[in-house]
Length: 472
Image (cartoon, rainbow, N blue to C red):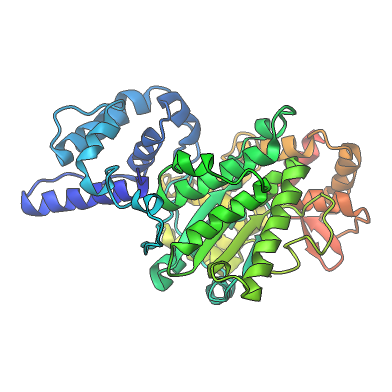
């Protein structure tokens, strides 16, 4: 069942009923869409609470979804669909009234025909923990990507520290490709591949990963599981990566326009060196074949990958995809971008106010959005008091501060050296310093704690200085 299409259809039905029958059914809210989506994915109310957050990133009360929002949503759907009784358990059956999303639709036809059939461009709607957020462009990065995705077999790698906006940027490019180019897109967050499974010594990691990957390709592209017969009939005489390549060929054979594969958080695979090396080599082979035009299908492929850290694995230049593509580095918001974001939240911050915020907190898009969400709903709060409180454990960034500390004190082999070098950075307040150990410098950058000034480094955000000074 195509969840994004289901939501679109429900919204269209609401509009149609309101126009034709003069009803006043309210549109689906962002939170209702997320609850509906998670319900269709089979998530329990308890599991939903772990994923859903308020605009200020605080948690909902334990029974709010189950006893308040859920029942109101089901009642709204009853009115929209003309069904007597909808519950979370009967939701899928009730949505069967939407003929265009039934199991007999053209979705399955692709897997039941031997000849290629034209497909319509797919819409990606990745979920955000804060719902639907305004987007501020980072010129010239977007325009550069719009041009790069037109090149057959191109690879674009987008990198930057955690929470810098890589996922939002990737979504923006994929949405442009759908709307303006009529391309096909597949969005995959590789963080969804379980670390626990990667660490299971008894598991055939490559076989499990590539089976999972092809399942996800199918789920994102067609919003349906692969036909079991396709897996059962795979050629067991070839490697797992070759099976994956064969399936990609199958998809590309059935599309008329280019396909963009957006791979988010590819560095999450680094926990398994076997899988990381195999998959990165495979990406390179796809791109090399696509660019050679020796294959009629692969030139339709473009790949965008995002990551925070460079691969800490033994991968020579001839096997790495990172020296083939075009690099996009995402940096913190500057003053102009921060003001643009403020305007999208209907907050009129002058230049001095913006600069004061950037000096105190920093230009991380997630940190800025969290502050704007908070302050928009509390117009009476004094701005200077907010800034003073924000750098403490009582402020709105308490989770970010604690997570930063946890990352810093993980069981790294170089943990003591890592903390020692960071203390030097913290203590050299207005003076960038040199860190000669590349591994230490790389880890501090991956965590998002430092920024570079020529060959020297300084603390990325003032937000962290007093907190880390207290606990390190």
